[in-house]
Image (tube, rainbow, N blue to C red):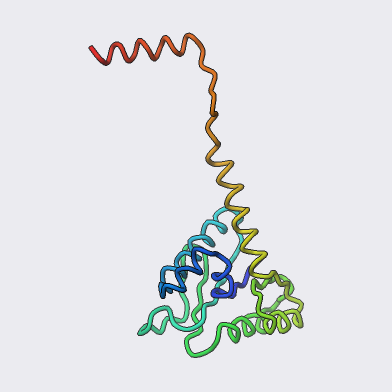
Length: 165
């Protein structure tokens, strides 16, 4: 499954990134979203394209770049909405694409092409849950009251006695 993401629409669904946007930290907020998405790609193997409104930097006319395994597009003089619609319109099999947005105009347009839609707030929740579950399996919680045998206690006591001499 391929995801086509309305970048800023999704970015505002994460409170930490939304706060960055209100503090005029656009690049950091965008980078934060891409880090979350990179982790999601690492866990799920999902193919992702993200479209952001405008330019990457004020004087850079970069149309696209690859960040990890994510294809990132900048709309430059167009809107991200326009590019998302063009991606779906030109897709040979738009039924296989899922567009992540809460923008009603985009939703209406892409469903005409039979593309799937997932609202940004629902995907943000899914992304967070996926990463949390993955972290629980990778980093198991420590046992609060581990059972230590008398042999283990004796071993460590002897080790510390030797080290202090």
